[in-house]
Length: 261
Image (tube, rainbow, N blue to C red):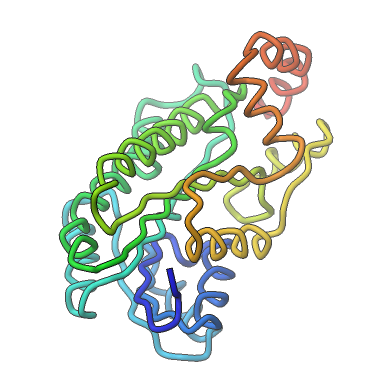
């Protein structure tokens, strides 16, 4: 789809990837509707972008928050695309995570974006061409110790994107899912960065991920994994999961060490 003069909603716009993504889309001539749960961070992002933006302070998890987002989109005359970027992460052994935290991870990463897509469908279907782009994680396709709830939330978004895209195949709305690997943003606590360093895992800069999102939004690709060799592991895990299980088991002691810090 052409991005110039297109209205694009970004949830979680004030994160590391969201800030870079907003800048790149603005450079491409898109009109932005920026969402975050922090009004202060939205103002800071607007100042960084150097131009007034439509801002919506709302939590995608709440009914009221989604209603506020939809109202802003209606007031803007509709939208041509939504990028579901809002998300949270917690690195810990599953048995140590509280029920409330597990619930919040699923709500923010999965349920909220799913329901927002449902709420926005009438606006998207009103366009001749529209796009839903859900930002997941490589962990949605590779179950990684220490991230059980997070992996589950992203795996659900991957399958949701696939199913909804097939359901809308006879409309002008296409659905895409992009899965970055580890990214250097504030989403990662210090012990995740320490784990990646200990395991030799590579991390991408937010601008690299943002560029990939823009490319995918403008193109026709429906599924994309970022990072090598991580995307190779995705395919191995799908065909020979026992191989990945064995590889993860060898790293388990190191993973547990950092998870329990």
